[in-house]
Image 1 (tube, rainbow, N blue to C red):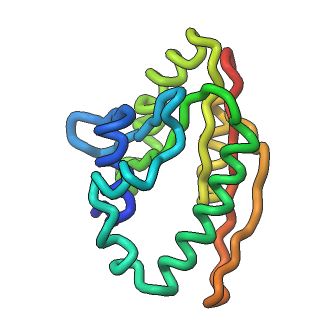
Image 2: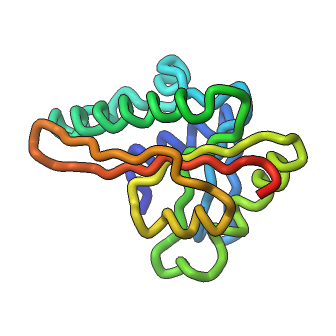
Image 3: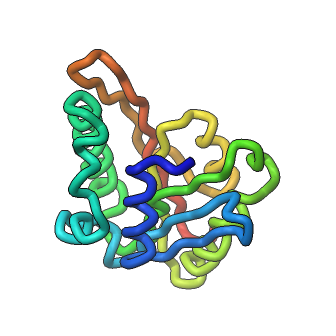
Amino acid sequence: MMSSAFRILVRYSLLYGEVYTTMGLDGLACWLPPGNTTPTFSRLLRVGIRGVPFQFGWTGFRRYAAVERFTAAAHKRIAPGHHWYLWGLGVEPVCQGQGIGSMLIQPVLERADAGGLPCYLETMNERNVPFYQKHGFNVMDEGEVSSSDGSRVHIWAMLREPGR
């Protein structure tokens, strides 16, 4: 089942980016294209972010805001020019390890290579780092974001140069 935040990401990518999926919807990749890699507040409102902060609760929303500040700064610093942004990749847990994620990101990796453009992403799951490294991404920054409730989120910001 898709979280509210991931639904927003998918809706946004359908309107302002590109979404790749399997026939059975076992996985999907959400990309934002060069020149359009920073989600805007007005566009987020258009795709329905209004109620999401209330679903997170105050603590969850503050945690989300702290993560967003970290990722926005890393994104701007690591990929300042034109690039592709892999904003989200998800594969149903029972289908992981079958090559679905690789298949879903391959079309844009090929386009980025053909256009001489890098690709950027963030992940908050350490298990994902080797997967992305296998596809030519390198960890450019990582850090831990703490929130007022004491919870911590570790984030890896990764970049793939063209032709990898």
